[in-house]
Image (cartoon, rainbow, N blue to C red):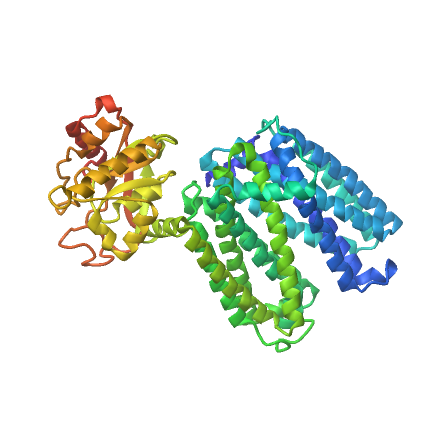
Length: 626
């Protein structure tokens, strides 16, 4: 089993997971029960049309995210997080007791007040939820932890939504919903008591209680790191995309597929399962590290399967009306629709989990909760815009299938725009694709790469993609010193320019470029960066290592930093090696998923560095496997 599931046995994660799961369940239990009640029994409470009332309820629930997220981010940074969580869950018990009172009195005003308080509680809980994970989990556990949280949340939403709709329809349904909501709230509080302490990030922070000025300041925090801000925009776009889809499920199930009321639940179920599966697969596909290369992969799937969903959607009325699920499932078209929805969910998981983990790892710890609060504000804004745009397009005569097509095209345009602004995402996708299609990479000794501070990475040079393979295995960016001729290759040029590789030329060819390369290396090391080097100076054409050149000694004498030896195994004879002639002469001559390995040795101190000893170390790490 993947190690992400072992977190479910850890006290530092399980109580938090249960707290979050039960909270998400309760939110949707009450919300859907209220929506069903308003839809079918609105006349008991008001003269407003059911559709207007349901949209009013949705607005009331999301309003607190605009009003209180900024304050919530400050509270989560200022105070110890486990205690804050317990207080929030204690408040949930009283809110659900108020909900029970509202049902008993049949007071619409009190029901909507309860909904507003639930939205407030969720808005306050959000920043704590995501900010506490990096304090309790190691970097290698963050993807798995976020995956479990995201999958658990969507499953809780699904179960809560179904339970709310079923229970409210029973005789005495409001009493059932009230009793379960209070019990689940109490269980959530009990679970929260097991959450370990998470010290305050900024105990001296002075709270600004003005929601307007603090919201603006909070959004400013999100803009302090460009990559983090664009990741937040990516997450918000996903919620825009998801809101556009989820809001169309009732109409799509009824009018396009011709199903009964249970067809909506079926669509929600397969979509939620897809999100859960995609989230859980992230750890496996990312090698337990924050792999932003999955984000472009996710965006591609979101557009492709949305396009196929539009293509597969039958003409309105062609399937019939009021069809039970059994009848629907007898149509091949419905199975294709369900498959598309599952895959949209799967690729949605690929898209969103790494982005959340990226925000957690790249945000300053003292401001992390406020940055996540800013994320919640922007998410809410995008969802409101999605609801307004969807309603406007439908009112203008656009069909639900056409709305899906528009969403797919918009997703592709937004993805291209984001990756143009931050080519790092596309760079990591190319690297990730390489080691998951052409090669099957095994990494040994990756912990030897320093987590911070300057170091020089050295390895044997077997192929044109050696640097990409090492980049795929490293948690930190590496600036490789590369022969300037490689920048002429279209794809490799993009990769190495984006990763800020350092071009170098032989002294006989361009002495000025060589000296500039050594100066740039010294500057990079002084800035605490990792620099990668292939001391052989050329790709092997025999499979055997060439003698190491003295450039590495010159670098270390000028910048005394540790040297990390690495050895690439299994690349000789692959597509990008020179076995039997020039590279790419026989594409995929070893097929797809060719097994390769990267082995890392213990760092060598500057004082102990000798060029011949370094070569022997790399040769020993490589062994007999070329």
